[in-house]
Amino acid sequence: MAQYELLLPKMGESVAEATVIKWLKQPGDNIGMDDAVLEIATDKVDSEVPSPVAGKLVKQLAAEDEVVQVGAVIAIIETDNDASSEPAHNPFASEPAVETQAGHDDLPGISQLERREEQPETPHSSERFYSPLVKSIAAEEGVSITELDAIRGSGAEGRLTKDDLLRYIETRSQDKPRVAEITITPPPPARQIEERFAQPTGNAPVQHATSVSGTDEIIEMDRMRKLIADHMVMSKQTAPHVTSFVEADVTNLVLWREKVKKNFEKRENEKITFTPLFIEAVAKAIKDFPMINVSVQGTQIIRKKDINIGMATALPSGNLIVPVIKRADQLNLVGLTKSVNDLAGRARVSKLKPDETQAGTFTLTNVGSFGNIMGTPIINQPQVAILAVGAIKKKPAVLETEHGDVIAIRHMMFLSLSYDHRVVDGSLGGMFVRRVADYLEQWDLNREP
Image (cartoon, rainbow, N blue to C red; front, side, top):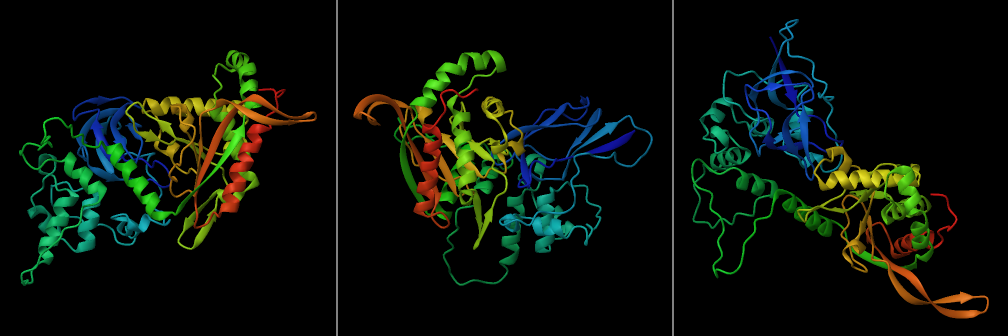
């Protein structure tokens, strides 16, 4: 029998860790090739980790709700391969190099991962399991294995969590007598809050908030809502937001879609919505104004070569997710329609892959789907702009004709662009949203779908 080490797979260039949500297989269960072993969650997407081999699950090396680094061993699978006693090759294994993009240096344990090749981990005789994150923090703070073994853990089956270790380190460092002082403890980071809610200490019952008045209901944020909240606050603190508005006459666009939608669905087996039409116009405008397709790193402006457009999608839970259409400018209308329908459909049933929400360079949100005529969206960092399209409404409008001005009923809509005023001035932001409106207004009624 050989033992196969199942690693947490790489899930996109900017994904460094994931949270174990649920084990789908238990020790002793037989596993077929490509069977889902566990469910994991990154910052927004829940997904399954399949097994590349067939065998029997011997051991789980990560508890539910535990944060695990990409590339860490999460399970041991016993296979029928007798050819070698060495661990089987794992196709999920990634290159040892660690990204050094802005922001990654702040992640716990990244500096230790970068030095792992030069400083191999010292073997020890402890039988207690420690997550890669706990071991990296211990190495950085000089906590020995003997000390780790002596720390009481509050995780599942007494496992030592990151919070347990941090509390121990703080207590250990406070060996100097202190004159009466008042310590104000700052609120813990969002991830620590999430872990504390997910990991009750010992056998103590979980204390649920209750309503004092007896009429109000207190609802604890779920994991995704906490992450969305953190992301939104971070964006407003990072970028000075400015919003520009344009009203567009999209009558030709509406009439064209009404004319072609039945034949299009019959031919392509796909419904054509307004979203791919909006994305096509955005991609064209980005090619005209490439400085909208940038990100900011300190005092550097990084201009993106690819045009990857995220589309904000509301989930049945009330949360929001942004799947990304990669290289949108290289897709024709049929390709855009298929991509939009596929990503939106899988987003609503939690079947997106982690990489499908990464690497966006611009975001589109359709507030009109909720009956709103306009909105002031928050930038999806690290991007510098986001476009909101409002509801299409019939309105009386003044038209210029060769016989003079006339009033006619037209299909009108508002577009609103929020942008980062550090790098996008009003002239660029205003011209960009105006160009998107121009492409929509100038839609060819005789165009082949």
